Length: 492
Image 1 (tube, rainbow, N blue to C red):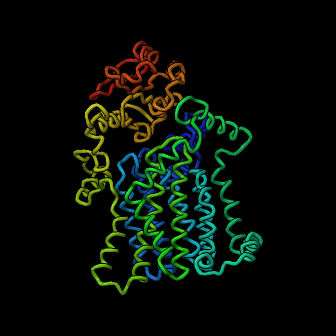
Image 2 (image 1 turned 60 degrees about the horizontal axis):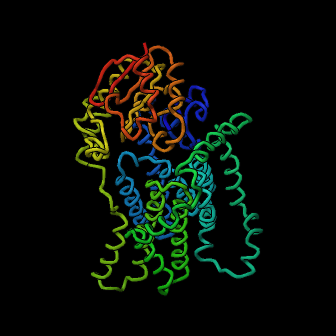
Image 3 (image 1 turned 180 degrees about the horizontal axis):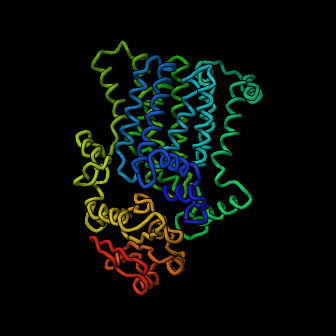
């Protein structure tokens, strides 16, 4: 995303300048972080992401105070959100699916959090428009957004057949909905503007068509893994507890407000599953939306329990609340450390580099045998070499063939040779002739261009994919330095 944003910043169209099929919203958030914190400073991306998460927390606390009667429940929900994000390794932090989910949650929560105020509607519409520009899957949550706009009526209003039959007409007569739609209709083209135009739109659609036209996972179509994702959902403790508590709110004798809240939570769970099932590839990060939405349970379930079961003995009440508290404890390890923040701060400010990899990267640096390669200190040494021996105009080809595919171009603020940011594309599209494309890019690259690769230890699974490229580099480029498994070659 950072490379896309950099290309866009210098006036190039990312979808033709590099191989990408992402929607522009993620690029725009990264571009904003780079403008705020500087290019070649990825920490700014994470700071922007945390800022968005805290913004969601603020709205959730306001919503909790208005709807649940206490801000304390909102703080519990925010804690759950932060722990889910903190349980992600470095590859899962600041994911576009997470950011899109947070924006959709803001869009759902903001109107009832600021009732009767246009600011809540404005934030809601703007957030949903940006979420749609990041992930078009956001359309799945449109019914939920409508529930958020009319939450008080959804929870406490009387539903009769005549009311339901006339609902569409009543909705569009509603002043608040018309204002929301106006902001959404204005904001959506603005956020999608990088791909709108007589030449841009066809080029974007062609880029989008690339993964669908290649044999492999992406060409399978939607709902390929729906059975598998449904089974995972129904056999994961966190999801099952969320389902049980939601059903309990519906079937235990309750005022209509809590029953409808339970139905709303069930609908949220269904939308989270659908978000994952509709994708042709069962990526692990597609489960993040469900995990974040379920954090609402950490706010709503305690409020319901303390209202409904206040007369229970203290031990039983505490046990129920402790069970709900399990929503705040992700099943995966926490990749954060309060004790190590001073050393991380010194590293970020340039006072003293960290002696080892951050907590979130320790499952990859140092690496488990056979799977992950490259050492943290070696990666930092390569980045330092790039900063000291190249300029921002130097083009770099990152051809490292092992996970975790270090992203030197983004961290050092360098642009790629040709259309590849890293080796990841070759992992997913093994039948496409990237070899010829890379050779042509290297042939036309100017003198001083750099290739970072593992020449003497190319991944045997992918050696055939870059056979001509490897021969061309060895015959045309000169080895400049070797750092661990990584070799840096320069075009004379």
